[in-house]
Image (cartoon, rainbow, N blue to C red):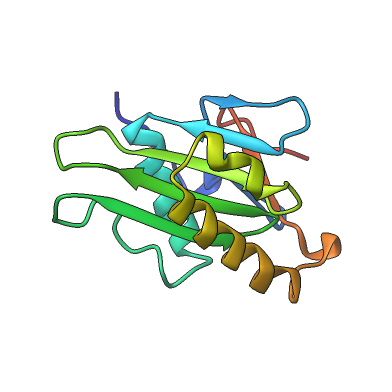
Amino acid sequence: MDICISSKDLILSSDNLILLVDEMDAEETIGKTLSQDKIILNAALMSKWLDIVKEPFPPGKGLLTIFPIGRYIAVVARKSIKEVANMSFFDFNLPFETLKLVFPSNTVTQMIKVQSAWNNYFSNDLDRVKLSRTLTPFN
């Protein structure tokens, strides 16, 4: 399934960047997608905000990219070229130590480093990133 959007539907609602996920909690503190179409679309949208997201599937055996976007720490992971990638978003206020049950400790350590650095710059007033299951823009 291809996701096609026109320039008028750029998923940029006012000053908000809307990122697509398949699952998220009610508080929107954690979101995740395994949909390759959503990952590619999210990466394309984020690349307008960030210089580091250029290509979601670089050549090689695996991929792990961790970076801040809005109030989230984004994690893009794929163990091998044959495996489906996943993209997850974690509110930077979460206690990342608890994620050691889900991620390897070196990944959690990197997430904590990003969280620590981002805490010096982030303000709730600057939060413009929203998670959504649909392409419906937010008001």
